[in-house]
Length: 169
Image (cartoon, rainbow, N blue to C red; front, top):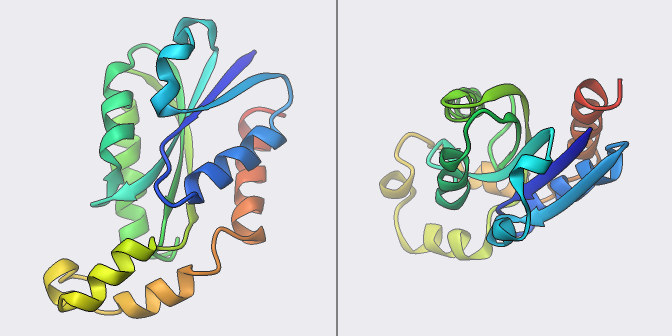
């Protein structure tokens, strides 16, 4: 079984958790950023794990575009977001990613981890009232502060469990 991990990362969070996944996978594997997608033949892989950061409750544009080019692939996702993994937002993100990955592919499983908010986005939040940018998230400041220590060992354990369950059993 040959596995490709291909990721889009803005702040380094998604890259970090995908690199952990890569460490944990037994067997033949390759990891690349989505920008290098043309350097591999996707037909050579039995499994494709797409790493994405969350934007507007879904995969970011670059990852979404890549996923939409796939068909008849055995696909998984690793998503990173600032919100609590128990939040309604995280559940919505998981469902949206599941739908996206299921469109033309054999979607198997996915996992979400937490990640810090980019400094650029944090700066934007200081310039505009939060209710304009994220009007449905009244506790955005708390989420940002709480997410600042992620990804961490808790997130890496989620990745390890996801990999063990789907690839190393």
